[in-house]
Length: 342
Image (cartoon, rainbow, N blue to C red; front, top):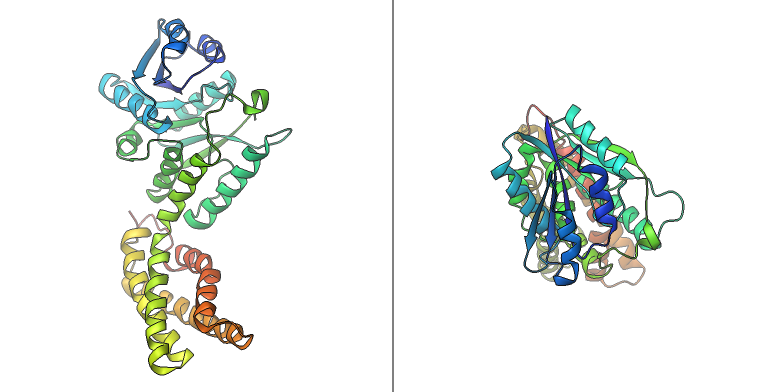
C-alpha cells in the first residue's frame, strides 16, 4: 500500500536534509520548493536522490499551493498511491511521528489522520495560545473538537485529494479549510499524539502571526457569514418596524421572523446541508426561534431600561446570542445523521 510523504518547503535549513535522509530509504517523498530562490539551490540539489522527487515553484505561492502542487503531481503520476502524509520542513515533526502517521493511514485509508501536538513543556506564547483560540472557535462554529487544528502532520486518503485541489486558499489557511471540508463531508478524523517540537523557539517558521492569523480567522468569518447576513436582515426590519410602531415586542417579532425564515432556508441547504424532514426541522427551528425571541426581547428591554439606546441594545443582544443560535442550530435543529445527510 503505497503512501507518499509530502513536504512543502520555503527557505529551509539543513534540518530538511536530515529529515529526508531519515525517511528516504523506506518511503517515497515529494518535496516542493515553494520559490525559495537561488540561495537555497544547494539544499534542494542535495535532496534530489533516489526515492525523492523535488518539484519547484518559480516564486513563493504559499504553503497551501505547494501542497496542491504535490497533490496534483501524485494524482497524475502515482496511480498505486493510496494516500499521502504531509509534514513540515522546519523540524517540528520527528521521523518517528511521520512514520506513525503513515502506518495509521495504511490501517485506516479512508480517514483523515492528524498528528496532534498536546502543547506541553516550553511552548512559544503565540503558538500555544493561537492554537487554543483556533480550536475553541473551530469547536463552536464547525462542531468538532480537535486537539490541534494547525498541525502540518497529516495523513490524507487519495479520494480526498481531488476535492482539496478545488480549495482556493493558497496559504496556511488551506489546512483549516481542509478540516472544515472533512467535517462537513463527514470524513472520519483520527488524531495521533505526537511530540511538540520547537527548535530555537520556532525561529525558522515563516508563519506571519498577524497576516497569516488574519487569513485563518477570515475562514471562520466566511463560514459564519449566514449568521451575519441574518443579523443584518433582522436589524433592518427591527429598525423600520420600531420607527413605525414604537413597540419593541412587535418589532422584535417581525425582525426575528424575517431573519428566521432566511436563516432556516439557507442554513438547511447551504451551511448544514441537511436532508432531514422539513416538518421536524421546522418544528425544532420554531422552538429555537421562540426561545431566542423571548430571550432577546427581555435583553433589549433590560438594556433599554438601563439607558442604552434601543438600536444599540438590539445590536448588543444579537451579538451575544449569535454563537448560541449558530451552535444550537447545528446540534439541535440540523444534527448530522448519516442516513439523511450528505
